[in-house]
Length: 98
Length: 213
Image 1 (cartoon, rainbow over the protein chains, first blue to last red):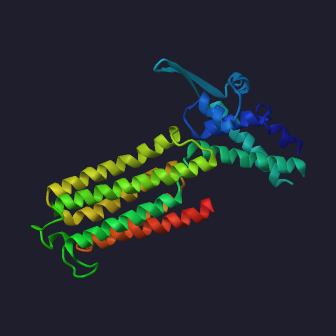
Image 2 (image 1 turned 45 degrees about the horizontal axis):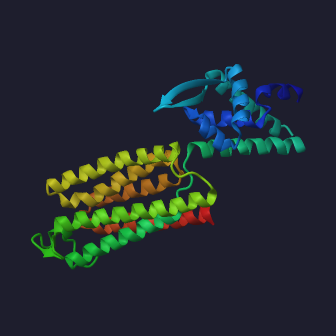
Image 3 (image 1 turned 180 degrees about the vertical axis):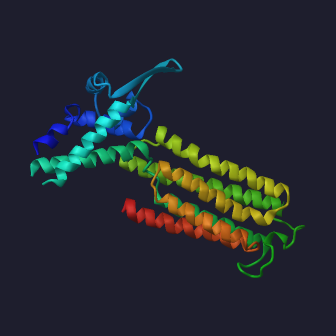
């Protein structure tokens, strides 16, 4: 039991970070505004969680200009995808074992 | 036990987020019903215009009287106007019911998901439309109805990746119908009315009761 719990990734113990990763798993690039609206968060909260995922190298950041407005988009890295699916596997295992 | 419920909840939240962020799920079943009704009206207009009844004879319906001018239009103009009207009314109905459903659910109408759905459905549809204009240009009228069914079915299947997956089955049915129709030229209008009329209505009602009731 302990072993499986250890497999649960600390980076994903937060719902917001899990939510961000869920969206990035099924989309190539998602911009800040879409993440914010879908997860119903304030700019500040979303930014802090994005930062921590970035520090873990789970997501890539792309900054571009659409017209004159800056647009920041995110995508999941290979490392992030692996960590996320391992986390999901661990969750499933936990559910099976009880 | 609490922990278990929490994990289950987390998993279902993840699933729902993945679904909502990658598919446009506000497509209303009623838009299918509306499209079906307009298609049947459009087909009925053709029968009135040509003064024939469904399954009357295995005559090429467009060859009944090629020189006829009725309601101020020759039959080619009439077909094009009729088809354009059916398409516009069906589109308007689709936009109306889908907007209404999205509003009710508090979802956005025009976002990257809708754009992706529209673009991917439009590609086979536009290709099919141009192809059918080519058929008309070469006077191959009998091939038009089966071709519209096949291209429309392909468009549904292509779009199904970006919206409710059920639309895939509608697409498969339309393609099967189109293929049968191309070997039964002369019953094109009957097949067309069945595919665009009845199948849309049945599909729309199933979707409506499955997701909106």
